[in-house]
Length: 216
Ligand SMILES: [Fe+2]
Image 1 (cartoon, rainbow, N blue to C red):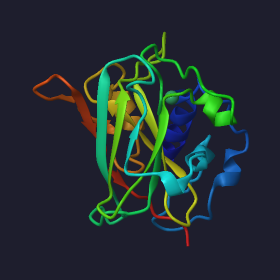
Image 2 (cartoon, protein in one colour; image 1 turned 60 degrees about the horizontal axis):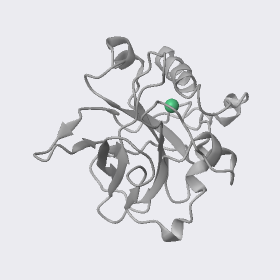
Image 3 (tube, rainbow, N blue to C red; image 1 turned 30 degrees about the horizontal axis):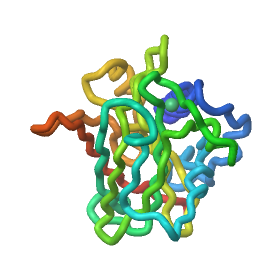
């Protein structure tokens, strides 16, 4: 319970420069059920996962290059069912992040979240192999803060409610401290992943996602 509370507090803190916060997060709590996180649906802005036309989505999207300036970063992963083994098809993954200055900037006016999440956001929908890919730029940490650079991700499974998973952060980089590690509860699997560079110098990070159990 202490970990869950800490995670909720960290999630709220982690977006302090983006959205206003829902004041009634408790109303998102599902009934207590074994194997289901009590705070699974406590989420700010998760409705943004439905702001893209699902019929047009593929398993690859471009968030950053050609949209904003910054070092290129490729994000790859596989979405698995809650057994951690079976690829999950038809899952929409919404990602948004800060720019190279650590800001959620230059959002558009269509929706609350298009404005607050900034223009560095995108959606994919997994195919039968569960794989997804984002081309983006490396986010920067918030200015004058201790929170690591991160990429937020929300998942939406067919017929389910959306939920937040642990942010992607870059192992060994600024802010990924022992205290940060302890505060994480691996919602959707761990988001603390190493940054890799290929022979050409391009940066990659892999973030597999293990879907959470839903209340029945
Ligand atoms: Fe954030």
